[in-house]
Length: 72
Image (cartoon, rainbow, N blue to C red; front, side):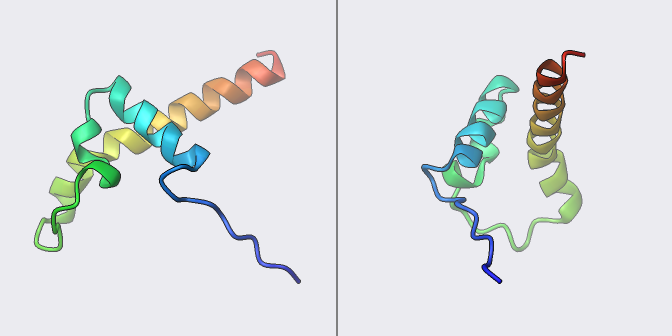
């Protein structure tokens, strides 16, 4: 059985999508590719408040895309 290897590098479609979503909501500075500083000492609550909206925006855009493809 072959393993499904995902491309999550800086040139991947997912990374480009994440950057687009972050740019739209003004949180580009929190994207991992733009922020190389150590965050091991930052509480999860703070990390979620900073980066969480990016994931939420990505999900919202994916749902909108799927709805358009299904004609809803």
